[in-house]
Each structure stands twice: as C-alpha cells, then as structure tokens.
Length: 184
Length: 125
Image (cartoon, each protein chain N blue to C red):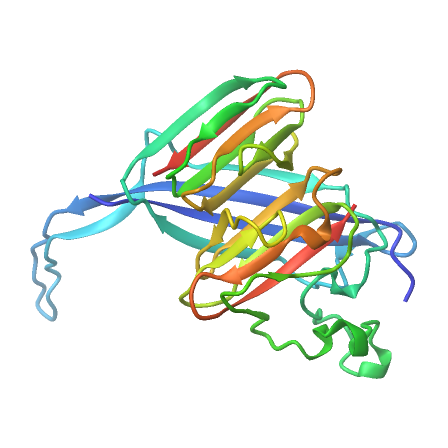
C-alpha cells in the first residue's frame, strides 16, 4: 500500500523513586478467619521526591519509513494472508517473527542496516531474566541497560546518530526484544 | 532499607489516514508499546534536582558508577544528552524526558545546541 501522509509517535515516561518501608504486625482474628499479619516490608514512594516523568510527541519521523522493518513485529492489523500483506516477507525476516521478538545473544548485533538519521528509538526487553544491553554507537559501549520487562525510548539528535548505529546484545545467555527504529 | 526505582517507558505510534483526516494506530504496529521494570540501587542513593539551569556548555548529570538516570527538559529550548561524555545523541524537547538503567561506565552530561534551558534530574546509585 502507499505510504501514509504522515506519522507521529506520542511517548511518555514515568519514574517512581521507591524506598522499602517497614510495616508493623497486624493483629486480629475474626470468627471464621485470621486477619493477623507479621511485620512486613513494602516499597513505597519517596515522598520528598515524588513521581517523576515527562511526555512528548515525536514528529521528526518520516511518513514513508525506510522499510517495514522499522518495527520488529507484524501488526495485528496486517493481513493474515501473506499475499495481501504489505510486508516484504521474503526480505524483511519479520514475516516469521514469533510473538517473543528478536533473539539476542551476548554478541552485539546491529538491529537494522538503514543509514538515515534516527528519529525515534523504542526497545523493550521481552525476556524474563537477562538484561538487554543497547549501544547507540555501533558495537561499542553498551551504556543503556534494559531489565526484563523494561523498555527504553529516545529521540535521535537528528544529525549524528543513524538507524544502523543501534546495536543490542544480552548481558548473559539470551534474551528477546521488540523495537521501533524510525528514520527522520 | 533497600532503595529502588520503578520506571515505565511507553509510546503510541500513530499514522494519518490517506484522506489526512484522522490519526490511527500505526498500521505497521497496531498497538501501544510499553515496558516497566524495577532497578535496585546498589548503594541506595537517590539524588534529585528539580531545576538545574544549563547552557550550550556541558553540565554533568551523572558521573560513572551510577545505576539509573532520569533527565527531563523543563525549559523551552531543546536539550541534548550524552551517555559517554562526548556524543550528544539524544534530544529532549520541552517536557520530554529520558529514563534508563545505565552501565556503571556511563557518564551522563547535557547541553543545549544554543541558548539556555532548565532540566530536572534524578540519579540512582
């Protein structure tokens, strides 16, 4: 199908600084069951800092992306019949992607080969145990770490970082990720 | 008592339909994307600054040996962020923020391309 007239990405970040708070034991017994509870600890918001976060709209990305591989998965909106899919299935590799995403090992791999400037990056670690490590400078320093279940997102500076500069690997054994890598 | 940070990054890719009338979920993605994780802080230190003035000269947010960083642009001029003390690859416009667990080798600094702005920062160590 034809490229859309425009694209944009709304994004939001939320940060909760937490401290472990001790709660006293609770005593009490009803006729039918015991309400009592031993002393326990629970993570609570650090009220002197409070909730942190920000949001924005990335309008830098091109309406016509560099390929369907800019997102690592097929949408539920895409056709179930490959002949009708807009995906270049025989080229992209994303055609046969399972729900658990791209598999990473401890060897760094470039996620895409497009050399346009990076507009927006989103990566989620779909794994259950190991961290995904992300480099914005090819297979160099992996300064960004994504714990299991976590994600990272950022806008590129628009002039230096390119889509093909994004590399990823697992900190141990393997993990899986999903991503968006949008060009300007 | 152990200190930690729970953070969420989420986005909603949108696509304008062919008649340029309405925005829909991007048909290459089809849904909202988000992830949430908790980072245990190795030294149990949380450092927050609600407002720091910055300029086109680098301002250090986090030296090495930190576990987590959060930077929000609270001004009106775009802010650039580096994780390696030299390559400013991340852009934050007004009200946008960057939050991530980071390597202990990361050295986070910010600056503007030109002019002044203000930022909010949180560093977990």
